[in-house]
Length: 246
Ligand SMILES: NC(=O)c1ccc[n+]([C@@H]2O[C@H](COP(=O)([O-])OP(=O)(O)OC[C@H]3O[C@@H](n4cnc5c(N)ncnc54)[C@H](OP(=O)(O)O)[C@@H]3O)[C@@H](O)[C@H]2O)c1
View 1 (cartoon, rainbow, N blue to C red):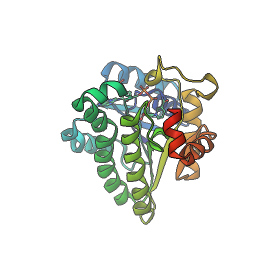
View 2: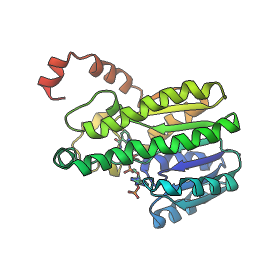
View 3: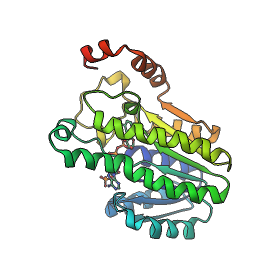
View 4: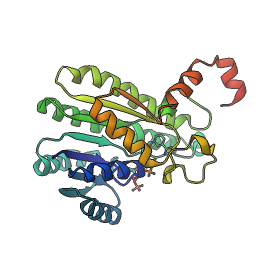
């Protein structure tokens, strides 16, 4: 039976992934900040086949609580097979341009908290000599775009941090998976105008995540075609990139 920790467990992508783990009879530990949603999520996962679904409240910006919460997770799960880090916010880019504190809060939630959590998790997994740390970054981190470059900067920081972690953890037999979704229909993107043919459902992303964990993939673009879209975007000359306002 797999032991799974999910941080930001109430995210739509995390929930779809948890449902797949539940179907396999996994034992889950869910961390998020909304108690009502955590309670119903845990109950639903048990109905779907999870061996157990424990949970605790965690606002990822409350770093003082990490030690206590992770201690409880280890007490409940023992060895952790998979830790999925899924929390995030897509803040209003324009508001971030006008308000330094808002821009920095976006960076705090999307990057600083993730780096802090991964620092603790990597030391834990290193001692275990195994398991997978899966982190949801984004294609937005591959090149800064005017519409979301504060968010993109945070995701780029996570990606680079995880690349370093991959090489460090390789020597301890720990797999670090960087997940780069494209556009996904979740509460985060509700109301945004996105080209329908490019928008994936959370369960498509979840299926790719579970497969990438099994195959010990290093970097997952999901759906797959984002690897090619981003290769094109990364290689566009900056004169064209700026003019086209992509
Ligand atoms: N949707 C996309 O198109 C897309 C594309 C690329 C990458 N991603 C990434 O995928 C991941 C999952 O996002 P999603 O699309 O599934 O969106 P979502 O359903 O809106 O999930 C975001 C989650 O982050 C949690 N969160 C935000 N701030 C938090 C905090 N301070 N402490 C604890 N939890 C916090 C939210 O909890 P509350 O409900 O309590 O606010 C929510 O559960 C994120 O890392 C996102 O950046 C999404």
